[in-house]
Length: 134
Image 1: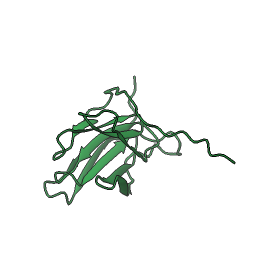
Image 2: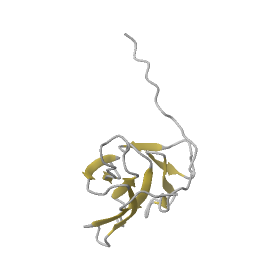
Image 3: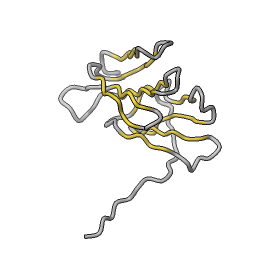
């Protein structure tokens, strides 16, 4: 049987709903890191068709942070609609290998802010405790 999978080659878009979801890499100055929904895009601004996609979230990404050394990336999301509780995990990524290192659980509803310590040994995550109500 023939495998008819389609691979994403290029994507355009950004909604700007959450702060801290567009950042530059500290050493690869021409590399921008942003999200579209639950997808992280690593893109050289000089070649928009040379994108790398990081997949691991099941809801919209609400926070991004790259470590001071540039070796790690952290991403947090809006609380999952697919679980009994609105878990909002933070994924720690190996930037060079483009692979997840660890998934931190414990936050719910929405990760609002991520910050690495100056020596990259610690990662702080801040989230909301309740759903936004209109």
